[in-house]
Amino acid sequence: MENLNQSYFLSLQSYDSDLDHLRDFAEENKVPIVDQLSLDLVKQIIRIYQPKEILELGTAIGYSSMHFASISPDIHVTTIERNNEMIAYAKQHFSQFQYTEQIRLIEEDAAQAFSMVNDRTYDMIFIDAAKAQSKKFFELYSPLLNEGGIIITDNVLYHGFVANIDIVRSRNVKQMVKKVQKFNQWLSEQSDFKTNFINMDDGLAISIKERKND
Image 1: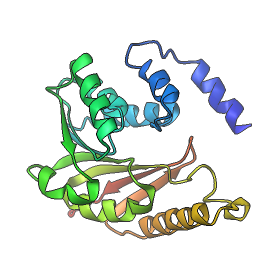
Image 2: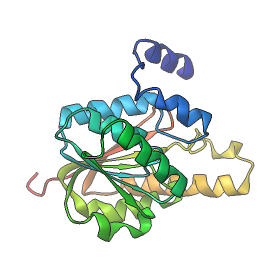
Image 3: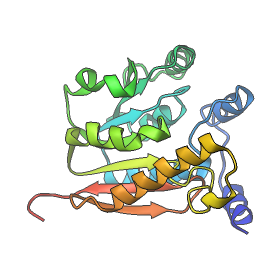
């Protein structure tokens, strides 16, 4: 039923821009990118909250960062990617779609890139990198988030296995699922963030950093 509901919602929208068609490119090249409804929700949050500086962990082909930047010319995105093939794709797409002025690409492992992005603070952070390191990334980069800012973590359901680990047969996959479970539990206990978990696509966690005077 859930897949039918998602298909129904997708049928109500038009995804026909040149940028939207990059999803086909990602699928053809087996590059994982943010699911469509999740992207729609994140973009709506951006429209409401109107962040000016966004930090993204995990560029891939540049699809989501360009969608973020497309909402307003006042938005600047700093995005981190370590894979050389993805970096080449992202550079090509940023140039092709004319986002080189709005998007800053950091060519580094997100675990090592802090000193390259701490020249500013951010209104929103989007974590879509190595799932086993979500907690590390959250702890590392959340000090750069402004009070009242938002951290959105993708894939917190990890293909639906997080809520039903017993169906997992692979030891490696089970270890990954346990790490995601531990991260979700840890995140829910962070008193300086208000977090909601969204059962959409592969799961989103939306965490708002508390203001000190609240």
